[in-house]
Figure 1 (cartoon, rainbow, N blue to C red):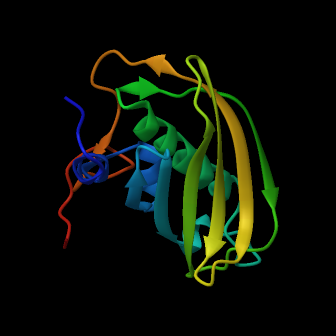
Figure 2: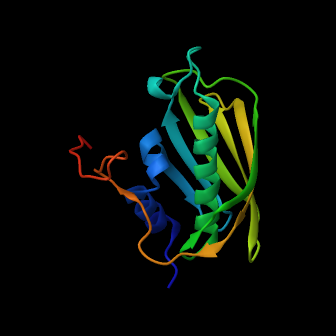
Length: 163
């Protein structure tokens, strides 16, 4: 029996991809019918370049996770989404200590290949970067590799949190 978006959001917030946990990405919106996900993230100093802007590889990782999450939600079943190709365009800097939003969207969901995109915006809605991607949709065996809420993204071990 399929689960509703509220339950899916709760499950996905409790068990994150290690990269999303490491970057401090907070999944706060999910629409499985539309194939859409939305994360918020603070541009932490350790992820910024010497100019004080979020480094491009970090932005790419955040956008890749947002697109993948949208595809997984849209699939309606447990799948993996290995990337075939992607392109990222950068339009403006994401400033250190600011909050940014990564929104992933499914463009076309196929049986084997799926197309998606993700945008990074600032708090005013200004577009900072866009990722376009194509991925394979594959069945997943086993438990997968996730970080449970309250675990360290670096080690996978339990840590105390104030939440």
